[in-house]
Amino acid sequence: MNKDEIRLVAEIRPDAPPYDPEAKSAARRGLVAAAASNPPARSSWRRPPVLMLAGALAAATAASVTILATGSGEGPERGPGRDPAREIVVTLPKLAPVSAGEVLGRAARAAVRTDLDPRDDQFLKVESETMYGASSGGGVRHDTGETVPQSRYLYRTKRVIWQSADGTRDGALRIEHLEPRAYPGWPIPQEAHREAGMVETLALRVCEPLPAHLRRDYAALKQLPTDAEGMRARLYAGVSEDDGKEISPDEVAWERVGEMLRETYMPAAQRAALFRAAATIPGVDAVDGAEDAAGRTGIGVGRTGRDGVRADLIFDPETYELLGERGVVVDEKLAQAPEGSLVASTAQLSITVADGAPAVEDEGGVSSDCG
Amino acid sequence: MAVDGGVGGEGADAPRERTPCDDWTKRVVTLSLPQRATEPAPPPPFDDAALIEASLADPDRFAVLFDRHADEIHRYAAQRLDDVTVADDVTAETFLVAFRKRARYDLARPDARPWLYGIASKLISGHRRAETRRLKALARQAPERATGFEERSAERVTADGLRPALAAALAKLGSAERELLLLVAWAELSYEEAAQALDIPIGTVRSRLSRTRTKIRRSLESRP
Image 1: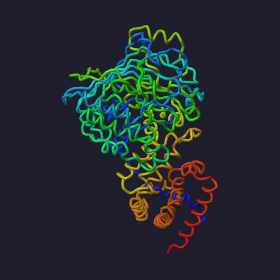
Image 2: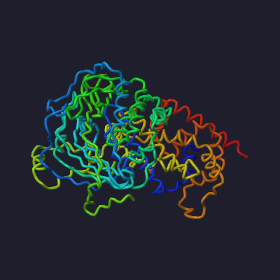
Image 3: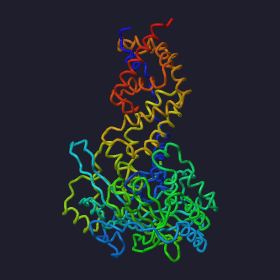
Image 4: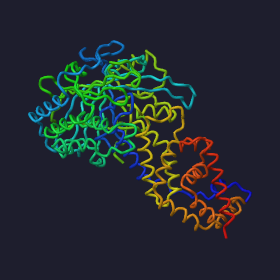
């Protein structure tokens, strides 16, 4: 045998059957759905899970975006993200005189006082304002070989989302881009300003049914447990061993709390159960003086994640309604930003029931069908 | 808004990679005209590491990695496993696992293929039965003499003749040995890439391959 054994093995390599297009698109859909629902990776908060609805359709939605330039991206100058200062620094969170359990308990009791009752054919319309981290660049262009410098900034938007109550109808998402803010320690890249003032509307097509655990429509949320224990089990469900190595189950559970509330309408009974379950997650505590993206001050309830950022839900100090969310750096090293800097901020402005969602025209003959 | 290479339906809300040439004049024009804003050019083709890094802030972008490499990973899984639906599952799972682990990706490596192959390899080794069936089928497969005989190299003919014995030898290897050997022989990874894929030192790649070759040689020599 004078021939290399590796080459012999290479020569008997079997032919592979082609990748079935259906299996392939199913795999891609699964990945997109996971991207829409997974906890954020380090250093940046995830955007609201719009793909929940659009889930099955990635390229499809992108094809039906309409953009209008309005010339103005600014709302009233209020709220931590509105100060055009280069960086936003809040004071380091100080423990509130009340416990997280107390705050969440009050929020749970407040939850059952108000409830919406949309019909299956109606839509939940949620208005919010958001500020999240964005990063780009840091790579090498294949065509020119030039290095594209890395940049990081905080992008801000005003969002209105219409989601079908039973998850069977196409929804819509209107995004108005506001002026960006500097990510603490990073200059704002010029191009970050480009989108400010643009308004776009995306169709959120319902294609194939999403797996139950990824659904966030009202009908699906209504099926969630109404007791704290059952809800807690949901929060911790399916955290694999593998996940456990890089992210603690408690952190996953806390992130899921945020995901269930972000741009959704959680029915009162489930909302109460969720707040009670959230109170049992280790590491969660309450801090005073947490401001939301609309400038409203409340009590922050949150925990610090592996990225060195404390993720708070902000509650109204009197009504205990949920106001918004924020992310504050508490570990400079992990977060690669100065302590006390605000790296995420949102405000939930209103949740109402609507009879329909705006129709979004498909453009340029590009089909936005699901197939 | 830009269709981000097909990533995520919400691409419009996400900041996209843009070409660095963006001047003030252009921006003013964009904002003042009541027309559809000029669409930014499609994002430049970034390498895998840049893409993975961008996906930390914008998870939807990870789908581009799938578009780039899914076919290749599927081809390898389908070569290794006798059941194409299992290969489908392995491919889907490979990218889901990669997505979850992306924060730990070594950004110094512009090509993510070795990393993806490594994940796929582990998943493949969890499908023992489909893998064994493939090796058995390989042993049975008759050499293709029907067509293009003269085009076939003498080497290929040799390998075909040895096919049953080679398949048997492959089946007898330890799974770590087979994993490495097939990454090099079938997936055509370099030693360096195989070392990255399996997360072992390159010295171990060399010594393990050398041991594996000896085993195969012995196995071929001892065949009846």
